[in-house]
Length: 420
Ligand code: LLP
Image (cartoon, rainbow, N blue to C red):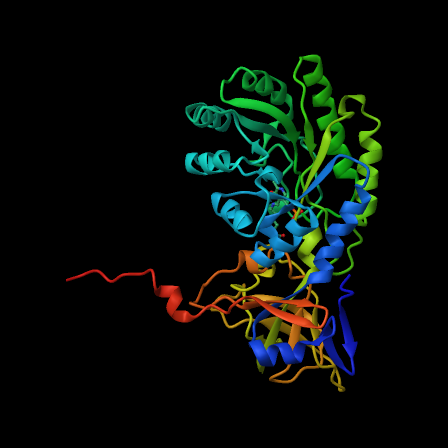
């Protein structure tokens, strides 16, 4: 799962670079990514799609560092964005706006205008009021907004409730049984051009069945739309493919795509439609780690703690979803392993990175928190006035600083005292 990592002479290396030397040079906590891991994940999707009309859009929210976007843009990826900010980022990194799809439940008018000015490929619209608003904005600009409706197929993705999005009770998308009516209504609005249909049922999904079930539901709708005289250009199946954090066995990227293509071929209504995807985690998740140093070892009657210099503000997933990330020592030590909770310095009981981990560690040791390439840095914060970590991209033997460590002064530079 992390074949860019290896043990060389008892020290963990990222490609051919020792993590120990990276920590010495750049300090900790430190995010470390592998160029080849990102590129090969994308290439696996691209190869599985060869010969078909497919656009794999990288969901920027997973990791929006400019260097990551740039690598994927150069590889031919499109992008899935959810804010004007992400559009700016994507453009700054060299993304082609005609390969950008704009998702999200709450786009505002300024974001709609920005996206129309730059000519994004499509707006994934999630509600009737949003359709009306978008039509108004586009018509006032003398143009038509390309639109896909995000349909909620009411499929259980079997994932954590916070990252499951395709059930009726979720805030996402337009209910499957309302979709036909909403398409009909949309086709009468002056500022819209209907180009697609999309769904996204959740994230970290480790089974094929929910994806296939969602596809069947969407295909059923496309058939009804064709009968109603509404002809689309593309089908966007969202993202959501899971990765291995621990012992999960998600389908391989190529297996997932082949299974979907085979199923698509059984639905005549889908023939000729371009297929879009919005993968985030499965492209970058296992291409990154968070490097952290043990500050203290501490024991209570109940527990042993390794207090490290990374915290929930740097990697929020354990605190927010009780997510599991493997944690491994950078330097392999002899001696008996003991059970530790790996916790950060933030003043919250939820500030832990791993629980009950069997490790042989000493103060000053480095630990690597694995599978942190997706939703790690992207969800980080400055809670407790902690500057965000630096980010490094390893490219074979080369090391690039792709984001500098924040400095504390910058964290309050936008704040002002009041007089009197
Ligand atoms: N498309 C849409 C509309 C989405 O909402 C998402 C993710 C994606 C694509 C990309 O999904 P992926 O391929 O990465 O699963 N912070 C959570 C994950 C939240 C996912 C939100 N939406 C986590 O750390 O697990």
